[in-house]
Length: 185
Image (cartoon, rainbow, N blue to C red; front, side, top):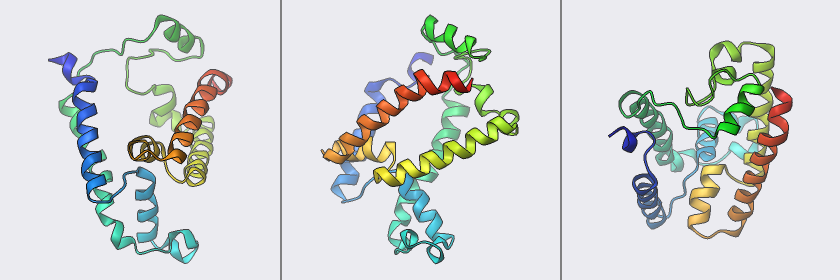
């Protein structure tokens, strides 16, 4: 049973994503996390400071179910659908990560060296969080959406800009992983 739950195989998660996307397309809605951030900022009054946040946010309240679902889904997955199995990483990847200072690559979902509260309270961790947040925010706005919006909604509705954005996401990820991350750690 553990092999089914951690992680879910493509033949369970893939059709679930497809069903959600089919329903969203049927009802004329789009999916993406960055639109939720825009809605939350508009609710908080950001429209007083920037035109981007001046819109009828009440029309987007339905989309906040994505945030609620992400939080609830994360909680359920962590507490009820997970086990303590170590992620089976390629030995070369494990060796490279250990060379960068990561103690137990694959032992946790995300490395404690980057995502623990202790790491985030260091000047280096705080700087990475701030710079990373600014870059993600800028990139999301510049690309007209986030990775989930473009890769799931955009590609499933055959949008050429989403294909270009997703290719850019992958190129950026490869550059980060192979060139920038080794410089940081």
